[in-house]
Image 1: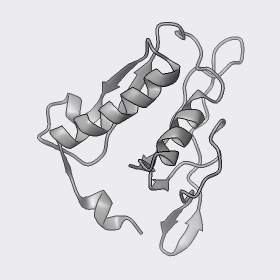
Image 2 (image 1 turned 180 degrees about the horizontal axis):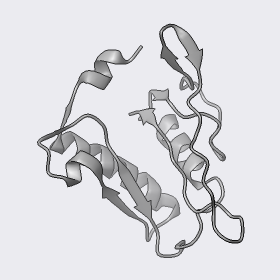
Image 3 (image 1 turned 45 degrees about the vertical axis):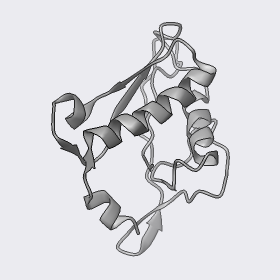
Image 4 (image 1 turned 120 degrees about the vertical axis):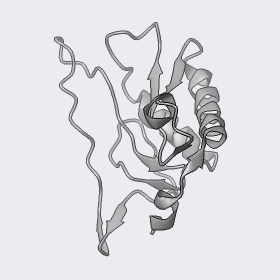
Length: 133
């Protein structure tokens, strides 16, 4: 469905613009948070096929607040920034009108989240999300 979008590469300026939107949205709930662009952007490539963002907050060094990533994704989707979810069943993510399955070879199936081993006390220490911005 979004095959052409996945083939199209972004300029560094486009990556920075999207990262800025994510950063503004993150800081609404976590004012001390840092959003760092990683991946090919950080390696200095002129264009990027996707955007890898690392979100950290000095108040949450050992755990991720429950549902925080799902809430962020929901806010971005409600504002029209996410057009397609490649990750489904993210805690804290509200059900909206954005599609939430990926299609390969005409078969609809969700992309599962990698399982986080968590910390010694059993709480999750990180979260992952994939989607089309």
